[in-house]
Amino acid sequence: MECRQRGAISDEEMLAYLAGEEVRPAVLEHLATCPACATRVESYRRLELTLLQSLYRWDCPPAQVLGEYYLGLLNKEVAVAVRFHLATCQHCAAELAVLSHFLASETRLAEASPLSELDLAELELAASLALEQEEEAPAEAEMGEMLPWPSSWPLDDGPPSQTHPLASARTGRPSLGEQMAASARRIVATLLAPQPRLAYQRDLTPSEQAEALWPRRYSAEDFSISLHVEHGSSRQDGLELIGFVTRKGTALEALQGTPVRLTAASGTVRSGRIDELGNFLFSALAPETYTLELQFPEGTVVIESLQLALPE
Image (tube, rainbow, N blue to C red):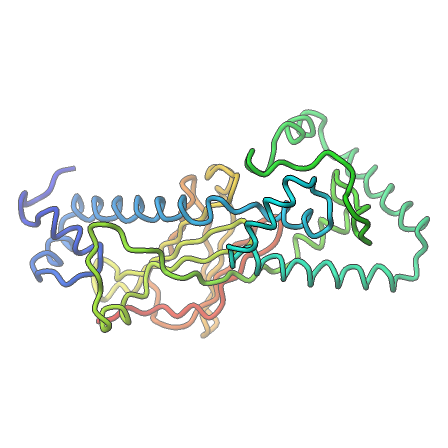
């Protein structure tokens, strides 16, 4: 596909449009009528989102390693590395605080349970046997070969360095109750601070900074979500919400088919799915407040109070 009017807009003007800068009205008119240039702009925007996603928290340990650090299950070398990282990373420090509160609550529930340790062991064994009968052996072998954390954050194979009420928890397949709780839990995503602007983008004035609301980046455990809002092909078409989802240590293809639900404050519900590139799209949206839900097997990632609006 070629541009209908070659040379109508320059590369500099296209980059300025992507950066949110003011451009000639002719540039906006050309992008609204030329599918080739509109596709080119969208490919640039997705490339920028991909670069920002790949750089965000690239050196952070996964949530599993933070949990084992809290439980005292890591060896000394890895524990020291995590401790130094927590001293400089506010995101991981906040995750560890939430995780500590959750595990402490779980400990209190376990201590208040009327079931004896023998009863609990029998229930866990029954659930484990039932799951083994349902699963296939090849799938288990493949899962055993996969490591859900980067090589720089290995799991400790040695004994725990200290005793903790939850340190004796099973490290294999989760129990049936754990799987049910995971599928029902809601993970509220956190809005992240804007990334440093790229080299070709000039510094914004205070008024421009107030209008530069998009794209927005959210984080929820090891999930990262980028959202961008723009007008449809014409002003009468409403707004379009474009999303890009990644998960640390997971290929984009593994996220394909994940249900996505967008609920408006007025009660309207829209449904969609993540495609093979990690994207999802909702079009013809009215400017109002929405709740976005991404329904993963481990739980539902929720972005609340999402106000969709663009400056005129």
